Length: 247
Image (cartoon, rainbow, N blue to C red):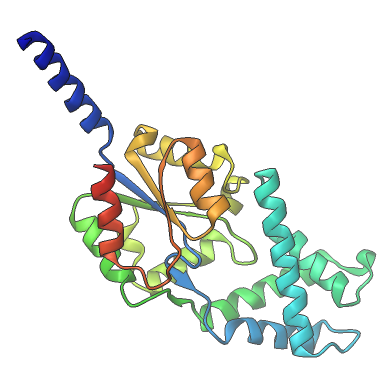
């Protein structure tokens, strides 16, 4: 009986150890930050003024950009790859009325450069007032943290500059962006990059994000713990409750 109790105790301890989360991976958009309320309109105004042969109104241009973004997002999720940002801009120009053969690399580069500048001038905002406290608290408790983000029109290097301006870059041990690795969530290849960078077991990682398929289902299927953000006003207490459940 004593021997049996001992082995039961050892088994319990091993199970307990295997449930400890050491690293937290955060999605970015609508998990930590959201677009500046004026950015999308300013981008459409720029396109309307400089690349608008049919004279579409700003609202229509915003709809074209949004449609292109959603289609490419869907393609990324299905294929596990990353549609190049340049291709996305080419599709927009064609939708605006340009013939495919007339869309030059210089045109695409000019748009990309200007949109990046607009993005820096109209920088994203925190999703809610608790975001900085959430990151600070988790870091203070000894967790390593990273960003795991699918990107669209705005690529990783510009996002990192923004994180520095928001004064939260210091909380992240590393960042993984789909445009830099050519892979998108929910592909296992994307999540594998987190394992490679941390050197941890899959069950030691918690991924947090707002996208049910890309962040929650994809992370669970890969072998991570996962927390689906449904309420944009979430706080550190929501994360701690989830951590306590899994520790």
